[in-house]
Length: 397
Image (cartoon, rainbow, N blue to C red; front, side, top):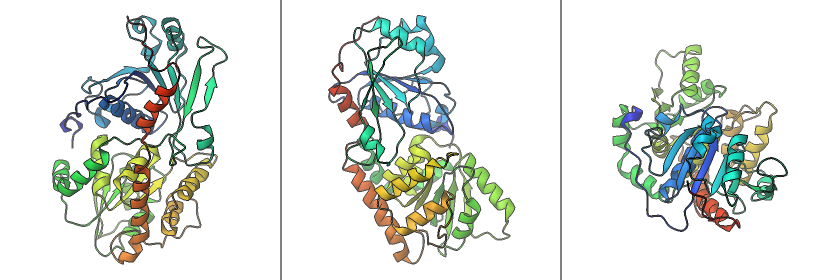
């Protein structure tokens, strides 16, 4: 489905509570996961009545991720190039924001900080939004202040804000009506979703595949070929499609029982819908992990690989924190290349149904558990409200 045919974003909901002007900064490090999270944050804030300026150093993903974003078609959000944050003349025309967010700890341009330090009567609530993790340090570090000891903003304070999986963290991004949307979509929109994508649905088990280039795709496809009920693999655009093409070329099958469909670039809304209708989701990185969790379907997560191997501890912490059963742990270990994994563990597809039960119970329970906690935007707004300088009116221009 071309991005341009995506329905326009929903209008603002009725604003509840105090609202602010936010400056959110994001540097795209790799694979567009950073901008994916920051855009969802901006969109959720705007839908609750806040106003957001999103400063990006690489906006090339937005036309397909959030169609209309660059053209200003999302109420409450404007997108600015990163370099414009150092344009003192431009800044002089903009109302200073009451909240600053450093996406994943990116450093703000010095010129921006200096210009705002001169212009604002009170410091903003300055948030260092960190990466998602289930490791123990997250609870210890969440909410801690970090006073600035030098520079134009000397004397101001940043605060660390950690997303997480426990009540003592900042929670997870979840729009207020997301779960109701999912229930309504799954019950009535599956056929329409496939029709819009131009994909035939023959009723097979559906597996979505969104992975990095180093995923053991060939082994996965071989395993799926053994599912008796038939499998339709929906392959997302980019690295997943390249990995599938390489696996098929390496070991071609004259009569492949698998049906595989290469999908076009999907907007964030379309990607959510893909996860909702699939029986098993292979996801990667932070944003899609959270969206797979809200889908309430069994999933396997490929964590972002780090050269020093630190990602293994992060993955183990997630599996421990969520009480993942043995089949889930085995496939996560195999999928992330950690060895000694029982790849013969059945995936939650087809028969016997008993093999699917641990996966489904884990996925269902995890989603319900997380939904009982306050979402990230609600917690972030409460945090901003609690900071002493919150809500003070900025100087006008």
